[in-house]
Length: 283
Image (cartoon, one colour):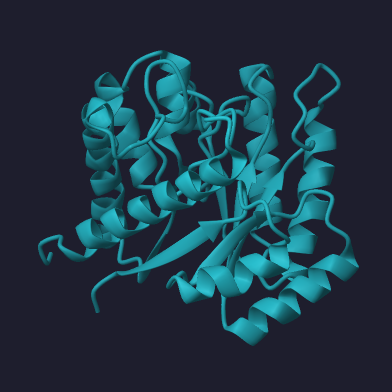
């Protein structure tokens, strides 16, 4: 059976109630939504699960070990505890996958290795997979951080690939890091299809000709992910077109126009990548 593409719509930047996102995403052909569980109550989780089940819509649950703040107070043990609490909430929600912002970029390498060894043991007991995002401020913040850590990390560790962050950290399109991208691709189970550039994690509008080279570079990397997933026999590849609002989206001064522009960008990216995925040659 050929690998299928699951399109996922993120709640970040959707400035209406989360309950409104479900029918909105369903009507536009998405098969799941992606939203954070940080700070969510059990009652809210139960209500969200009922709404998702009624709409026959899946969920990618985003967690953030230690929360979204970055600081010296963050510890491995604290992040491990929050991982356990947040994954329990994701399971309560009926999520199909967990996307984790995990760890802290400032931790020494020995602490990072200990952290992921401990996480691997906890993930082994979970009924759903965990994808660790290549995200700024986290352990996998750059191509070279992953390059140096990967040989010592558990074989079971899987990624959410978002290469836009790496471009921002490196201040360039990371075309010179293709070997690391390929290594990550072989472990990627979820993709964030945002386009970054040398001075930021998100281009102003990927539809503009000025960003054509950045779009083309990211698409080459996403092709590597799809190739690796297909070679591994994955039945489903999931993709979120995770472009975000101000300050990621350059504001025009008209909030309603900016809302529509963000929705248009995400929809353009969704349809473009779906067409590319389905137009790939059979393997």
